[in-house]
Image (cartoon, rainbow, N blue to C red; front, side, top):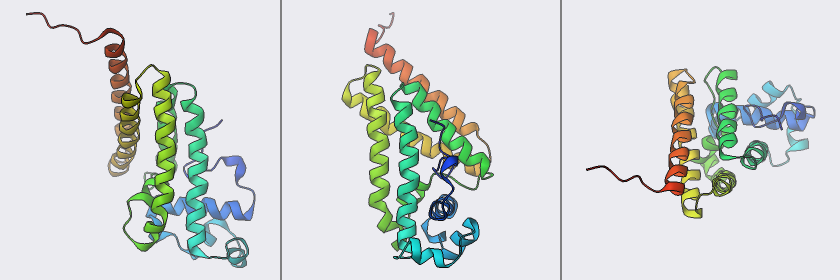
Length: 211
């Protein structure tokens, strides 16, 4: 599978008006948060006629927000699941590819739409919190299984999964503020080192120190 684009949408899936509107809403969400997702902005970016809003989304803006988040989450999760099924190293590279693409194509103005929905405090974000939590939960489960397949105990695998997701999301924030991909690469390298070190300790134990 080709990694999803910065909105979470595979490029081949942009044909229908409805899909274009969802992709556009996800783009705004990752750039400005839920508060920035307006019907006018979605229409301007998607090129859809105004009548499309209530034809495809009879509940209006709240439905667009909800479904855009679900759409982006499903597409990114599919990419994460595929990578996790191969190995932990492939999973790390997939996370890097996803956020590398998101950052460079937006000129560092956009990050993760799931994080944007999860951390907001307004009324819009509150209705999206449970959806974002479910998506992060799926990433956590996929990551945990990848580490279990590497030989880690379930408790350690879960801790590594949490560390991976938290570190990668934090790296995206640093990249946006620095206008550089270096924090993303640095974090990925440190995570890979941590995984290899834990693998070594799991297999061989902690080396004894010489007196």
